Length: 123
Image (cartoon, rainbow, N blue to C red; front, side, top):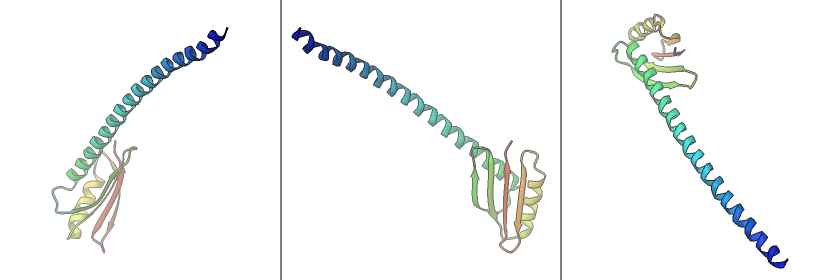
């Protein structure tokens, strides 16, 4: 019948419209959950980076140095470069790094530029 032909697409559109709304709501909810998870992960990375930085600062033994570069990657690799006015300060810090029980540091001391570059993997 003509009436059935005309109403069938309307009924189908109505059903599809309801499904569409349901799907959109589900996707929006999942998007919110993913956003929250990303924020938690980003927060965690910042906290871990700060913990690594605090550890490096503790190894500097209160010496007057300038932190030129610091980075910590997701796989817990820490790299930093410091400079000082006196090579003796950098040598003391190098000794402190090599005796560190938490991280195995690879240290490079540049006596000409008065810089110390170190890298290691946090435990």
